[in-house]
Image 1 (cartoon, rainbow, N blue to C red):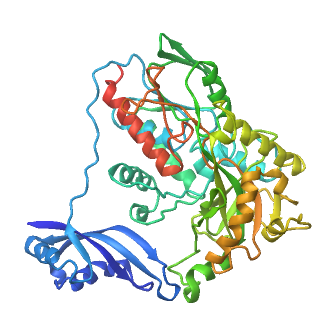
Image 2: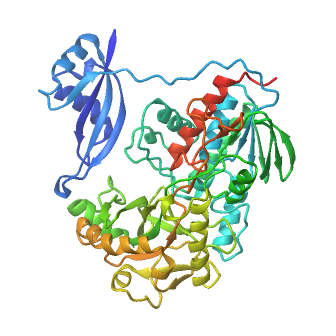
Image 3: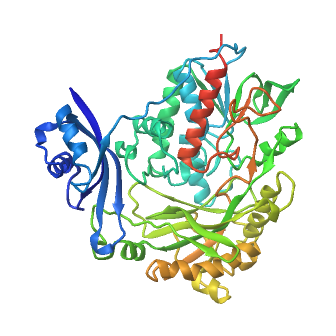
Length: 536
């Protein structure tokens, strides 16, 4: 008979192997190693509060003989560890609902939300049809490489559209503000599809843009083996609504009958927003992030964050997360790419936007991060798509300023603070290569420029004066989140005016990253299963 306990705050030094954990825990609790029946890591994080005392902190599950478990819990506190009885929260999945589906469910979009929703529907016998406007990941990688080499934008296969969604070329970070069994189930799916097993417990798990294509393709192939179907190059152009119910979808490949569809189009499907608005599907403007991308030599960030341990093989490339009050708003970093690259987040010809990514090795000599403020709808207008129009205005200006060639507008951070344009060649990891030195001020909304002027010096002080040293700013960074919300009922997850339409994921305004989008896809698939029986 054995019992599981959870142990928190277990310390390992940088040179200690993780295999030492069960013996270390048993020794701290006054137990012999023979009392340990089994173990697994629940959480691993780097304690970097003091650069002269960097170490890893673990939470773990220990399966102990019953009497040993009682002694371990009793020793909680006295041992310097927190020990408590542990039982993992079970993943909940409903029985199939009673309402019949005339047609198999459709998933619109093959990003994280759509792929996970489709996979779970297929796993439960619903044989979903996934419609993706872009190409499969293999073809998409080739299209992106052609663009980076100087070719034109393919408006249907690019950094934002195609199998895997925007996340395929946006670093692959799996951080999430929430936890629980739904998040764990999503991470399990990724781990089962060639991601590192350690993503299940790392504090800041990361897939890497080089690994994401294989992971995405594996999820899709499993979905197909379970009876699902994916149609690439199939753009949804209309929704057929009769008496407040979904009846079908008009696509670039013809009409698709559908009485249940998960709408997971992503935050850059601006033409889809236009179409939904014309068809009377309710849309709301929501707050969204806007700013620039800051880039520094990775070595400087390593020294600031790791101090004398900088370069230790257990640490890798250092990251950061900063937030300061800058006048009337918060200025904060997000999507920090240690050892990464600045890339063009472009889906429409004639517009420019920056983003960042890193590969699993984090071996670029540069660090970069989004540096943004939140734009409230009250700062734009009352139109549901006012945020989209706001983004487009500045993206168009950046494209023109870059010479209409997708050259990245760039400026030394010190020049920005001193109100002067940069000149000459500036160091950058920008994946398309060409940059154009200039003054970014005219390319940014006034509230963003003010926040940068106020907040950058504060961030620099917080990072040991290494945040702005040799730093450049590239911009704008305007696609950090969706400026639109597509309302849905809290319980059924269906549109309040279109029965059978399930708004989902980042494009619908309910997520902000790979994991949160995938979890929203999971929960939307769960709601569909609870409502409908498997199709005939």
